[in-house]
Image (cartoon, rainbow, N blue to C red; front, side):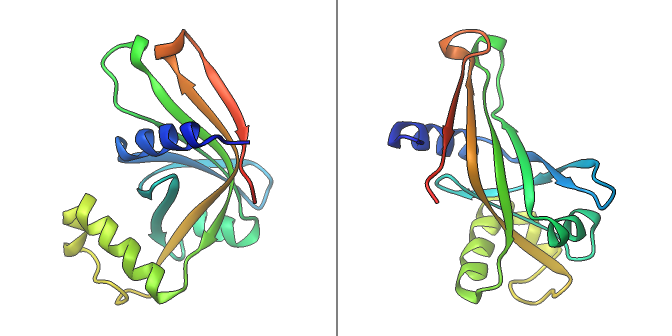
Length: 152
């Protein structure tokens, strides 16, 4: 089970990072990995994509995803990252959409030139709900990882 300390560590890694790689399941069963910018609220991850993108269609058919995030580093001795086995859930509740839009605008102010809150029905916003978390922390030794499940 993910401890409070691990949850804080995950939140710190996410907070320090701008992009993640998300792998979705294609209709033919092959994984499809793409990079997206994201925001986080603690250990909760949100990302947006065009509602008709391949990843959106993949998620609609099978919400299982894998996510990998690596915080910026200057030396291999300081690499920190997170990989998740998770479900991607489309956010549809207006209060959550507005809250996440504010998080996105704070982290990526350039977003304002592309979309306004609640205005672009072509965009889809997703929340990543992890089930298994692997925390990579080379500060504790080369290849050090901690594997934990997340309470439902």
